[in-house]
Amino acid sequence: MNGYAKVRSRLATAGLVVSTIIAVAAIFFARPSTARAGESAAALVKCGSSITSCGCTITKKGYYEVDAALDYTQGLTPKGDCIDIKASKVILNLLGYNVYGNDSASPYVGVGVRVLKGSNKNFIEGRGSNIRYWNYGIEVDGNSNIAESMRTSYNGQAGVFVNNSNNNNINDFSSDNNTTFGVWLRGGKGNQVNCSESNNNGVAGVYLGCSASGPSGAACKGTPNPKNNKIFDHSAESNGSYGIALSKGATGTILTDLAAGSNSTDDLFDENSSCDNNTWFANDYSTANQGCIN
Image (tube, rainbow, N blue to C red; front, side, top):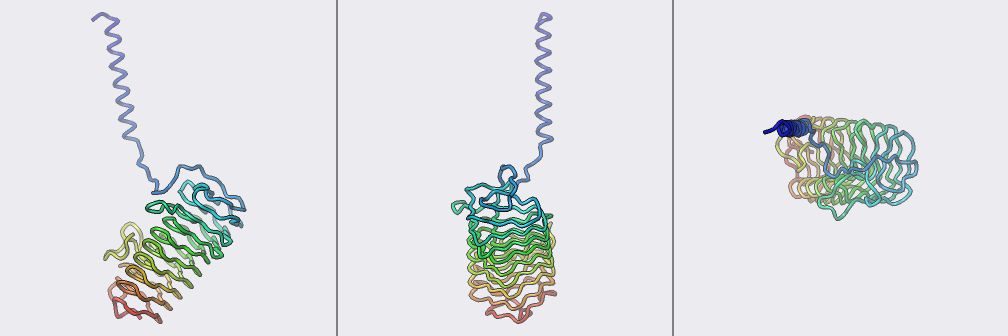
């Protein structure tokens, strides 16, 4: 091999080595995706004080008003939702307008209105709005929020989802005909659900626990058990398995003034031995799994 050929051979070999190193480094340093199902690649669009289409995020405190019917075809937030609330001390008035997701999706995806983690002390007023065809109608990841006067029906995993957050008050609403739960409290403490109903849901009207399919016989792992919450003045009728259900580890709960009937497994269900320190009293029901439920 002459000198010119040797140089070309050495350059080709060096190029192959460099390409191999780059490829291996790309694989080694690649970070796995943490996107949740239904999240989109949309850029963040800030909501104005008058909201007339899906796909915006509230980034500053203040008063915001929905002034037209909203649906997923108008756009989605980077989380794949209709409206996300990132700021604290926000007042969102839905003014009775509908907030609709994709009713052709299987399963449903995204959230109608989501209060993001770190977004606290907000007030969401529905004025009777229908929030439908999302995986979650309302999701609350922040603390000390109030949401009221809405119909979170015909959604996927839950009409109302309180996701490991504290001291929230969800009241004066209905959450019917959702695929799995009417209301799901996954972790969190000091939350309150009242003056409301959750009927004809696939598994439970109200569920406190971590399993996405309802009571499983095991306490939460990786997420704190729901503690010291209050469920009262609530109706849960004709749900697939349970009216109101507490998983193992969901303790310190006050449950009173509940009306529950025609639920397939039990109207009222507590997976904790002797109800632990949950207090069930002054309830109207037909079936319960333990004598400590009153």
